Image (cartoon, rainbow, N blue to C red):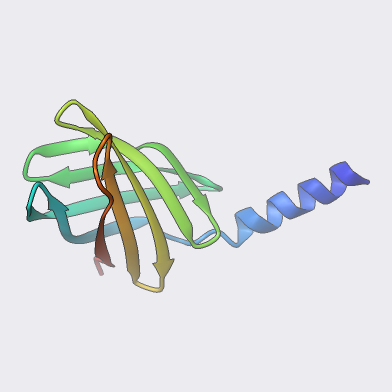
Length: 113
């Protein structure tokens, strides 16, 4: 009985996952400045994959996850791990970015039509 309930809850959470597939862009803060960055997301169940394109080049999204309206993933920049977390609300994505050993910085992405 517990196993069946667990499976049903897991399927419900996956079904309710936010649809962030596609391109998103915004001004991402980094070292006292900000740069236009484009995120390309692909969602498969609760797994998030894709890439991050910035003036420094392109990086692959790692450890991506979608839970309800929350997303999280990491990438590598300047030989450091950067952790991203966000909340989806329609065509807007409120994000934080935290470089290993650094301070969390907030920014907002908009869905590219």
